[in-house]
Image 1 (cartoon, protein in one colour):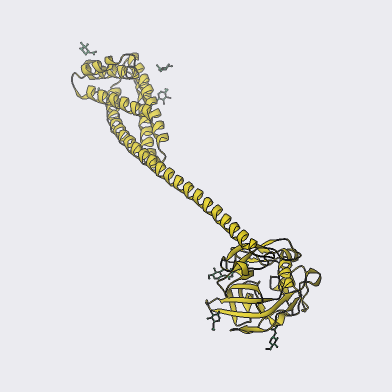
Image 2 (tube, protein in one colour; image 1 turned 60 degrees about the vertical axis):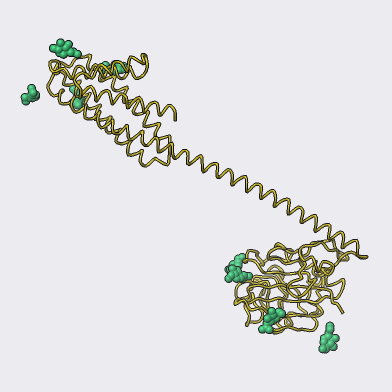
Length: 411
Ligand SMILES: *[C@@H]1O[C@H](CO)[C@@H](O)[C@H](O)[C@H]1NC(C)=O
Ligand SMILES: *[C@@H]1O[C@H](CO)[C@@H](O)[C@H](O)[C@H]1NC(C)=O
Ligand SMILES: *[C@@H]1O[C@H](CO)[C@@H](O)[C@H](O)[C@H]1NC(C)=O
Ligand SMILES: *[C@@H]1O[C@H](CO)[C@@H](O)[C@H](O)[C@H]1NC(C)=O
Ligand SMILES: *[C@@H]1O[C@H](CO)[C@@H](O)[C@H](O)[C@H]1NC(C)=O
Ligand SMILES: *[C@@H]1O[C@H](CO)[C@@H](O)[C@H](O)[C@H]1NC(C)=O
Ligand SMILES: *[C@@H]1O[C@H](CO)[C@@H](O)[C@H](O)[C@H]1NC(C)=O
Ligand SMILES: *[C@@H]1O[C@H](CO)[C@@H](O)[C@H](O)[C@H]1NC(C)=O
């Protein structure tokens, strides 16, 4: 930027002087003084021949006597034009945001420069004719226009500087925001760590106060969230404990509360192992559900939210499924209570089916047709793993949210 400003100032000086020498009778003197103040400078190189040229053209008697020396002067002015060119280039690279305006300036400069080149060429061709005098006059006009353009450039330059200041300002604001963000993220990580260690402390505390390993969400009924439990004949695993939907101490085995981002059209192995995220949509997994219903009698609570937001429930007091060798048959549901029809009864006694394990009683593959694993017969009264209109409880209730909760029977 520094170099650029100097160039602008220099160019402007040259224009001022050249104009002065064409309009004033004896303008050569102050000009000489100025240039001699900085001998050997670029300014002198450019300006001296220009000065000599204008002295020549201002002298009436010498007007038609254009010489080789004069041509040399014009040749020198080409160097001056190179400076304008580099100035334009500087300007162009100085600010992209100014590009549009500068492009206009640059093209104006270009046409000026080519006009001047043409003039010089004509002068060379028409030395010692009166036409050259006319051309010289035109040349002076060009210089005038160039001066205006150069002052425009100075204006643009200060605009660019302002923009640069603004840019720096914005960069600093951005930096500050970035720092704030990083700080918040650090705090968040800390909070998460703290939360996890509290959770572990709670688990340990509750665990140590129990004689047997924790195998349900009942001990965590006042601490809903994700906890690890240990069920006989299975490795410890995490479950989501829910104490809000239907009273305290429930384990969530299936959940559809998200924005339909989890695919429930999974193969047998996926349904065995479970899938999804405990803080979104998920299926706990048939092996785990089997272990949970195997170790003690459990009840099942089905939470239903319709497309219109209506909430319903269905509850069964003896939920049990068999193991993988028995295709996870829905062995029993027990007695039904609820404020919706008993739409799961139809599935009782049926094995589980996925698109790659057709265990249903239909001639076709229900899991394939309804793009979800479920305890299909021919095919279903309710399907909590499907999508769209097939995600329903009876045909009366198309669902937007579902949860399947289990809990050890209390009596
Ligand atoms: C201008 O012309 C006069 C008269 O011909 C001459 O004496 C003078 O030296 C000329 N000036 C220049 C700068 O050539
Ligand atoms: C113009 O100047 C350049 C170098 O400055 C030189 O090579 C060239 O011969 C000159 N042309 C004329 C016509 O004097
Ligand atoms: C100058 O003369 C040359 C050779 O005679 C010619 O090619 C060129 O077009 C002329 N330039 C102008 C501007 O008349
Ligand atoms: C300039 O030259 C043209 C012809 O080329 C001529 O008609 C005209 O009168 C001349 N002008 C002067 C001021 O000598
Ligand atoms: C529940 O409704 C919301 C809003 O209409 C929708 O974005 C979401 O996908 C629906 N969830 C399901 C499981 O259909
Ligand atoms: C059905 O039961 C749910 C859960 O207790 C309750 O929120 C809802 O208001 C009940 N709806 C009707 C129509 O009884
Ligand atoms: C279901 O209800 C019937 C009668 O209402 C009762 O005899 C039976 O024991 C209940 N079953 C269970 C598992 O509680
Ligand atoms: C849910 O997602 C499945 C793809 O995973 C898509 O085919 C289906 O249309 C979506 N349903 C809704 C209600 O957005």
